[in-house]
Amino acid sequence: MVNQSIRVEESQSRKNKPDSSELVFGRSFTDHMFVMDYSSGLGWHNPSIIPYQNLSIDPAAMIFHYGQSVFEGLKAFRTQDGDIQLFRPEKNLQRLNHSNERLVIPPIDEEFGLEAIKQLVELDKEWVPDAEGTSLYIRPFIISNEPYLGVAPSGHYKFIIIMSPVGSYYKEGINPVKIAVENKYVRAVKGGTGEAKTGGNYASSLKAQEIVEKEGYSQVLWLDGLEKKYIEEVGSMNVFFKINGEVVTPALNGSILAGITRDSVLELLRHWDISVTERRVSMQELYEAHQDGTLEEAFGSGTAAVISPIGELYWDGNHLNINEGKTGELSKKIYDTITGIQYGKIKDPFNWVVKVGKKTEVK
Ligand SMILES: *Cc1c(COP(=O)(O)O)cnc(C)c1O
Image (cartoon, rainbow, N blue to C red):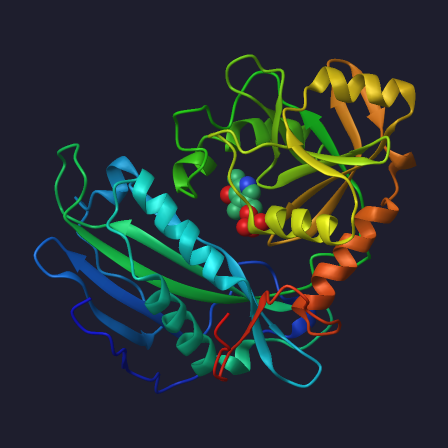
């Protein structure tokens, strides 16, 4: 780091904030953004908080051609006391560097990155909505912006943080979704970039998503790229199953993205002494558990929805109905507990919450 202090240029005009009942994910953005540059000689430098604005980028910038970029997603929550808190943000910064490593992007100082997030949220704190279930979504990302068409790691990058107020994911209560198992396309393969949070993984997932949506399913269940037998993720979430009283989730295998919600679910289940294993789970096993009546619950996990129950899986002509299409008891309990901690409604025995605008306790 060349300069650890963040230059702040406050916006002279403030935007109108959308009504909390009309918040749409990722459509409106706060008054400010964080920007920091990297160049090979200087390292990361010139960290600034500036009014939210367009970027001026050379059309030859490498991001447009070869997609060398990474991103993160986390939220700030407003508690009943009006405090603002983040959920395990240090994990997002760790993962950002993990993705950076895979995409050959220079690492950022994780503590400094967290400081940048906190300062930005503090400045735009009026944008953290207070209606039930709403939050401020924070999107840190890095793009390669050296103007060069050669295929090589870029020598210039921009680290940017933007923020968007988001509405409640479950406006009409938690509703289980229908999922189609994807037998043709794959999201990622071992040795590929599935473990990294990078735009290319999303670009390559759109095709399958478009097809199943037309058929009335909300997401795809991704299978492994080699044998198309083993379950990996659901849409852009990690996935859990409750089979015969035991919770299972696919083990991180090199192509699955290590979700922070996934990690939180695992910790929570262990804290509750509920048996949970990370291992390979095949579609055949799920099918048989369904036939036996032991496939009790299924749900996706991720920052956006926290927990997204699966009510039906469509696989090779079979409609596997799970828990009569209703939200399972355990799924609901996990959802209530994690969101309870996020909004400060229940005690946080794990030290997951980080307050903004107050000194953080050293863990
Ligand atoms: C971000 C992401 C997840 C979920 O991660 P969280 O940290 O829980 O939000 C899962 N799968 C993919 C592919 C992702 O990009």
